[in-house]
Length: 287
Image (cartoon, rainbow, N blue to C red):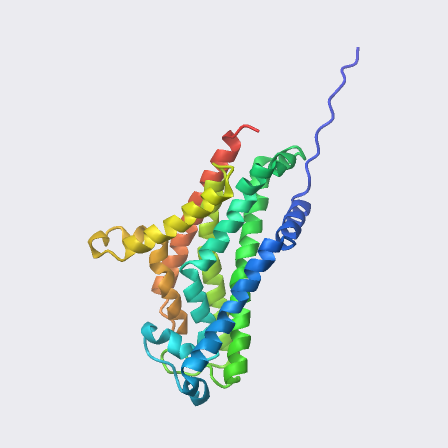
């Protein structure tokens, strides 16, 4: 008697899943609204700073020598405005956007029942997490790139292309300036990947996206408060937010790399921890 063999279940190709995930993310009205609002921030900053100090934009002089003069310098340099916008939004708005993406990726789909459809496709849980993580990573990269691009365009309209001064008072060529902005975008994106990974980990434990948003936002606030307390200086090296202001170093000449490298390594650690927790939860979660 012949034994009937059960046909193997075919899994969907990862590339098709990633394309489907990205289409779903970037066709969602909430995503487009968030990217549009982020794009407006450098425009508002540039106009506000020019109106507040109209001589700054026309003088074309070098910006100040310290981070405290970052905002006034943004009105006078094409290089400073996009990085100043990234620095300011990294303190709250960009992490919130990363948390929103992570919350929608797992908790949002669990609450609507669509995540079960992924598992019935069938899609392995490791592949599912990879697809969701790539979706969050792409969205956060797009968010940082949108701020940088509109910052450059706004500064060019206000100042022209002859104001590429650093905080050290030196003037860069256009390729060097673009390279500095690209470095800033990459570094900020890495920090957002870390936040998104933590959001994915929390999202794997709950069906309520607002819990993820509240947890990440609360964590950013708590980390910021702890970082301001000198009595807890022993804790500061472990806080992700402690290095976020070092993005200003991109505007110095030469670029001090120590804090930027430290921040990148710290973000990589948070990224690994977040994805590990999310995977551990997904493989042990029923349904």
